[in-house]
Image (tube, rainbow, N blue to C red; front, side):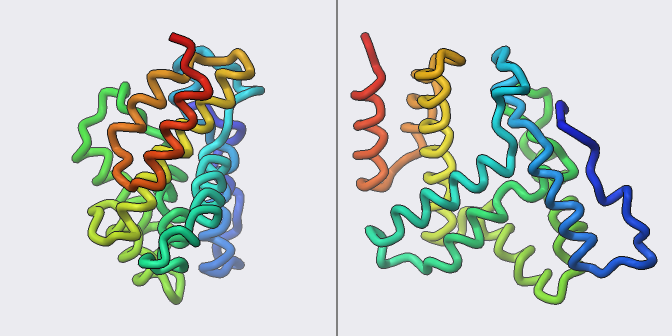
Length: 197
């Protein structure tokens, strides 16, 4: 995994730390971990987003779109958006092109999420939220999964306009997972804007 720096929790004197400080020094690594799929397509690290930047983008899209989805619990949506990739702080950004089975990826991420969050006073609830997202057990989890795909398509489109990647495959892949009518309209508008053939 390419990253800007190693996980900073290893720099802490844990005997003087608190659970919150330790968890933060683990989670903050997402700011240092590049999204590996872009690098595998030849993007320079100077141009590549981090996992934290992706999570921020997903959470911001949720904020922008929640008014159109009054049936959803807004706080839960934002929690899921911010937690959905938290296990990558230890596991890294495993892509579909890596030679790691889905079950193994989930096992590793579960272990990492529990290691990071369980120590917090509200850790058990946060771990349950993450599991809810992974299992796609609620309308909120399903919405955030679709937002995750929309964010990927939007970021790919930014990179395409900057001349860094061809985004069509990303938009097409994301569109397969978007079922919300509101989000389908956004995906269609994005494709109409960028597809040249």
